[in-house]
Amino acid sequence: MREFLAGAALLVRGLGQWRRTPGAMALGLIPGTLVGLVLGAALVAWGFALPGLVDDWTPFADTWAPFWAGALRTAVGLASFGGALLLVIVSFTAATLAVGEPFYDRIWRATERSATGEVPDAEYGFWRAVGDSALLILRGIPAALLAWLLGLIPFVGGVLGFVAGVTLTGWLLADELTSRALSARGLDRRARRALLRRHRARALGFGVATQLCFLVPLGAVAVMPAAVAGSTLWAHAALGLGPRNAPGPRPAAGTLTTAPGAAAPTVAHPRHARPAQPAPPAHRAGDAAR
Image (cartoon, rainbow, N blue to C red):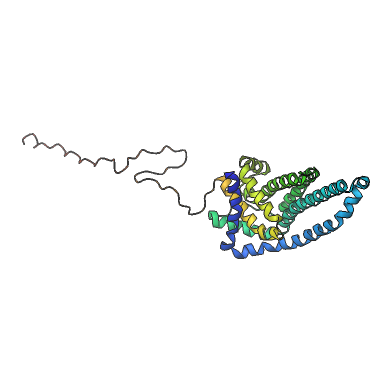
C-alpha cells in the first residue's frame, strides 16, 4: 500500500510542473481538448442510443416480470456504458499522445531537465507514438470487455466491473505513459514491462490515480499534461535516478571517494589520527662525542 500511494503521489508531483514550465504544460491542454470533444460527443451519442439497443438485445425479457426485466436491462445498460467509458478513456490517452506528440515531448523534456538536469539523447518520434497508441487501444478492448462481462453479474456486477476496469486500464495507462521516458534510456518493450512488473504496486498507484482523474468530467483534459510529467518522475524513481542537486550524504572528513568497483583506500578519521612524529635527525659524526 505504501508503494501504491507513492505511485499516486507521483501524479500529484507532476502537477508541480505547472509551476516550473507553465507554458509547456498549457500547450499540453490543446490536444486533450480536441480529442476529448470528439470522444465525449461519441460517448454522449452512445448513451442516448443505449436504451433502445438494450431493448433490442433482450427481447426475451419482454415476458418476464417487470422487476426482473428492468433489473436485467439496467445491468446490461450500465455494463455497456461502463465498458464504453473505459474504452473511451484508453482511446483518449492513445489518441491524445499521438496527436499531441510535439506538445508532450516538450513537457517530457522540461521535466527531465528540471528533475535531472539533462535530457536523454533519444528520439521518440511521431510514428512510434502512433504505433504505441494503436497497441494501447488493442490492449484496452479486452479490458473493457472483461469489465462489461463482470458488470452483468446481478447486484455486485457494477462494483466488480468498476474495480476491474479501473485496475486494468490503470495498468495500461502506466505502461503507455512511462514508455517515453524509459525508451529514451534504451529500454525496449520487454525491458519496460519487466520494470513495471518489478514495481507493480507503484505502477498501479500511478495508473489508477490517473484513471480516476480521467473519470471526472474534463479531468482527462486537465490532468493529461501532469500525467506525462508524473510518468517521467515515475521512470526516474524506478531507475533510481536522483533529482538534480538533491542533498545527499556527504563523505566524512578524511575519507576519499573512489570509482565504483575500485578498492577504497583506508583513511583514518582526523579525530583518531595520531599526530605525526618528527623524523629523527640524521646521524652525524659528532653525535658519539656528545
